[in-house]
Image (cartoon, rainbow, N blue to C red; front, side):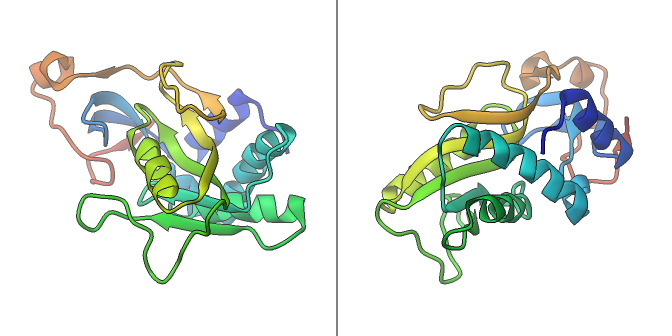
Length: 204
């Protein structure tokens, strides 16, 4: 399935995923806007539709990863939807969807799950700003002997500034301004700073 940027942006707004306020991003940057993709992921129909669009880009490149790994919590559900989309298209051995978690500040794969040496892995996240979480998961996958082959995201906010050293696929390139805390105009206006997931958010 192919979706254009305007169709995806409309979906984000329809489900209330495009938020305005004063947000502290996981990167440490501040922003006036935030996209909360879990508001899409709660609807399997929407999540699978986006996953099929991303999987199509990955497969068109000639890659056929058999495992999808995403950082928790942002990629929870998303990694399973993408694995499902690849599984339908590849139709060989089942494609796995796994989330990496960091109980002590460092990403791990837990809960009895393992990666095999040489296993080809697609790293996914919902929104890419600095790429820090994806980079950490890439390092984790390599440390376990598996082979990261690409990174995929719904929304690329990086402005083309990230080089993962791997193919990078996105569905939307979105220019949402972000600030260092010391330069944030919202801080200077004493706007309350909230982390995504709090109640002080309103849909765009």
